[in-house]
Each structure stands twice: as C-alpha cells, then as structure tokens.
Amino acid sequence: MSEPLANSEIRPLAVVTGASSGIGYELAKLACENGFDLIIAADRPEIVEAASAFQGVGARVEHLHVDLATTAGVDQLISLIGGRPVDALMANAGHGLGHAFLDQPVEAWRHVIDTNVTGTLYLVQQVARQMVERGRGRILFTGSIAGLMPGSFQAVYNGTKAFIDSFGWALRNELKDTGVTVSTLMPGPTDTEFFRRADLEDTKMGQDRKDDPADVARTGFEAMMKGEGDVVHGLKNKLQAAMAAVTPQSAVAEQHRKMAEPGSGQG
Image 1: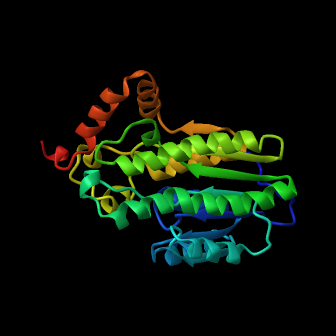
Image 2 (image 1 turned 180 degrees about the vertical axis):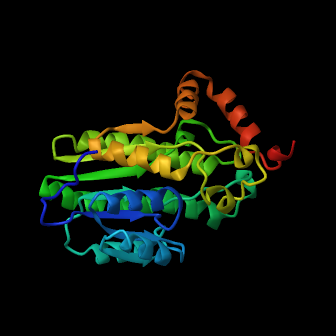
Image 3 (image 1 turned 45 degrees about the vertical axis):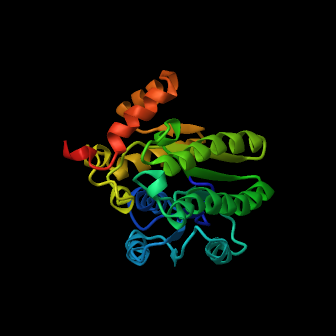
C-alpha cells in the first residue's frame, strides 16, 4: 500500500467524518494502522469509544461529537483542525431515509441533504483550500452505487449520492494540477447501522446479504492512497452499476421499488 503523505519524523493527519461505526470507523482504523494521527467526528455518542479504540492502535486521536448537517457543527470541526495540515480527508458522514417521499417529514429529508451534501461540501471546501495551498493532499468521498439509480422509496438519499458521485469527479478534474487527489468510494449495501437508521429493515434491501464494512473501507482507502478517481466495491456491485448504466431509468426505478418498498422483505 502507498506510504502516507509525510516524512518519517511527522505523522500525517487524517480527518474522518461519520467515524463512530460502519465504513467510517473502518476507514479511521485503516488510517491509524497506516501511520496517520486522527481527527474523527460523528453525530453519534459512540465516537468516544471509537477514539479510545484508535488510541490503542498507537495514533494520536481527537474526536468530536457533533451534527455535521449544520454549519455550526462543521465550523466546530474546522476549529478543532485549526491550522494543522490535513493530509487525508475522508468525507464519509451521511445517512439514509426510507419510505415514500410524500410521507417523509420535511425536517427528516432536509437533514439527509444537509448531512450528505451541504455539510460535506462545506467541510471539503475549507480543507481542500488548505491542501491546494500546500500542493498536496488526498480527499475520499463515500458515494454509493445508489447514486446511479433512481431510488424509489429512498429517493432523497439516492439523489444525494448521485450528487456526490458526480461532484467527486468534477472536483477531481478541477484539482488535477494541484497535487490534491479526489477519490470516490461507491459501495453497495453494507452491513452497518444504515438500514436501521433509515427505517429500511423490513425491506428486501434491508434483509439481503450485505458487504463487510471493513472490506469496503479497505477498497476505498487503497483507492485514495493510489489517487484513483472512483472505485466500486465488489463484483456484484460492479455488475449492478454496469447494468444501471444501460437499463432505462424507468426500469431501474421499478427494480429499486421492489428492493426498498416498505414490507418488501416480508414476501
């Protein structure tokens, strides 16, 4: 695996959001195992336990329990970073939302957008400016193959991931001559808290077999360290992504409905 961005005397710094569990936790673990110190943040209290675990691996770890859907929350994270150079930013914070769009409270779908898109972009813009000034850095977005599909009964979430998948490639192109690389991890269904938090446990999608978050994170971390543009984890997900690209969108939406419609896992 590629070496971290620093000399042998100074440990590089990685910032990981959504690091209390799942893919974010595993990304942070890989970072500290590969010589990074950490600043980790999440909206879950388990971030405290995660910080303790990473310190046991030998990293210097600072943590923040904060809602990154808010400007104030992101500002707290930026304040914690201070003027320190960030060598790797893993923008992983995000969550889903199941059920029909018309049944979702405004505050619920707005929080998905503010976490997955608005807060993520605000943080990335602040950190990327500093990276460009230094002429070095790595950014990893956690996108999703969901961004390639119109997500019936998960419409807002899939829409936010379509945005992130697209934005990652656009930002990569803008920064191509700066020494800063931008990578996007595109996982499929992964065995995390996502389905419980999104109220998708009674769906076919929620009950089907899922990928191991440690394996997914390793795919993304290695892609980031190599400076790759995007990476889809797993053969099944690669096939699904390829099919979504050539199948009429109306048909993809109907397929997604069968996976995500409430109660679809009970048949």
